[in-house]
Image (cartoon, rainbow, N blue to C red; front, side, top):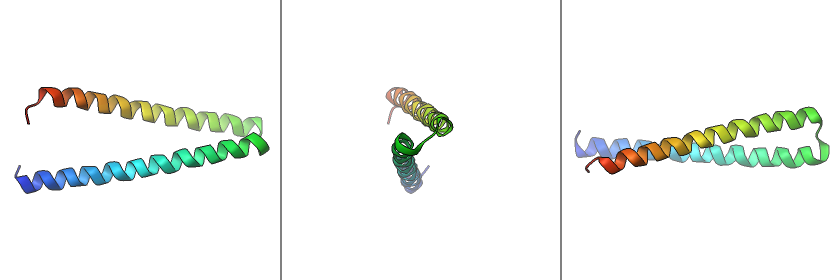
Length: 80
């Protein structure tokens, strides 16, 4: 790979992670808003739905942590 190709690939990866972080932030804020609304106006059914959404979000975040940790371990053994 030429230097320019590496730079373009890194730039693309950075943009993708930035968009993903933006989406994660939006989803988290929406979940907090829904939880607040549920506190005052919710039913048992809406509480179950919110819990399922929260559990799914936690699963995704845990998968990202594992992905990050695996990549950190790989990066230590690779020469630059």
